[in-house]
Structure formats: structure tokens, C-alpha cells
Amino acid sequence: MLGDDARRIAAGIEEYLNASACQGVKATVKSEEMSPEKVPAGAGRPTFISYFVQIDDATRRATLTLGQAAVLLNEIEPDWASDRLFEAIRALDVPIEAQTEDGAGGEE
Image (cartoon, helix red, strand yellow):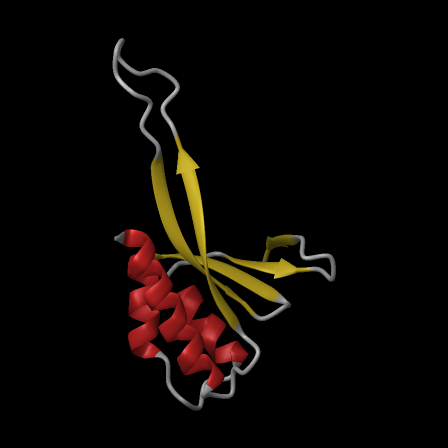
């Protein structure tokens, strides 16, 4: 269910951005899996999956929780350029990573 929500939110964000001045900005789903190191005897090892929406404009990247991404989806305006988009992301207290040509990033 959460994976479906993440894909729906990411698709909605990308659709809004492609219709605005932010063309070329990508919104993708990122997932992280975690299993506990120890489980009770006889119990199966559960896997917990967290979903995020990554916003990327080739020079910056931000990873938002689903709640933050849903808020952003409701705030996007048609006249937003990339700078305005990342200002709104910063206002959600989301760190933004600067990207190099090889795709590596560091926090701005």
C-alpha cells in the first residue's frame, strides 16, 4: 500500500513539474529495507520497507518522506522554477544535496 502511495505521489509531483517551469525535474520513489538483527526463536525474520520520494534536477537532490511529498504536491504552482521548488523543499526542513556530474552528492 505505501509503495502504491509513494508511486502515486511521485507521479503527481512529476506531472505538475513537467507542466511548469520545472521541466526536467524528476520525482522518483526510493525504498529502504531493514531487517532486525535479532528475532525471537521460531519467528520469521521480518523486513521493514520505508518509502521516500526523491526530487532531482541534475544539480540538486532531496529525499522527502511521503508526508512531506504529499504537502509539496499540494503546494506546487505552475509558475515555479527549480529554485522555487527547492526553496519549498527547504521550508519542509528537508536537506538538499548538491550533485556532481558523476551523480554523487553532498549536503548544501
